[in-house]
Length: 240
Image (tube, rainbow, N blue to C red; front, side, top):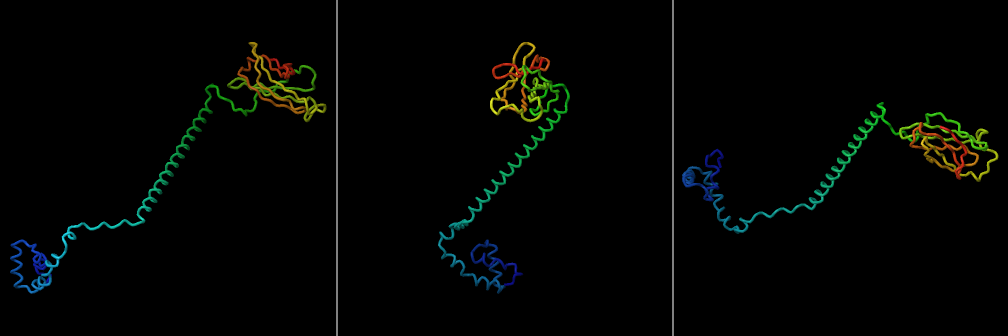
């Protein structure tokens, strides 16, 4: 068939009766003068008969859907799990960044508060080194020991650092026995007559004892400090 013919593509429509009447009449006139179109019509003239043999339900029924591959559901589940893991990682990173930011701001605020000098009271660390000089306490009786106490003013009151030692120097006292160390108490008397027991301990014979106590009294409100035996007798005293 001459593809340059203007009727070259009308043969199938003519055979199936799909051409409008005017175009059908023009095509029939053309067939008388065009052997190519006439031959093409002759080749497909039996097409309507073949189509008439096809059952109507086959022609009108929709094509059956293709079955889903067996790998589709596992792949979707894997993708969902990967997305959930990525989401948890992102949430964890965001939480860590928030904690770090809060910590940085807290440190900055603490540094700023630590640098200010506005006279406001501040809590002293429990391990702060005593800044007050130690004062020798007066022994009550002759036990051969010496005691000293440092009274350090702090924001919450006064810290007391007590040391009891053998007067002969470092090391164990020769006449001490391993047993019978006894218990002692550190007592503070205020100028108003109040009494506070601020520390207790059990002595280790022949050893230097270092004890720390605390009182809410200001240094100027302390009238006296005593080391008392377990039966309440004073062993050492420091008058305020």
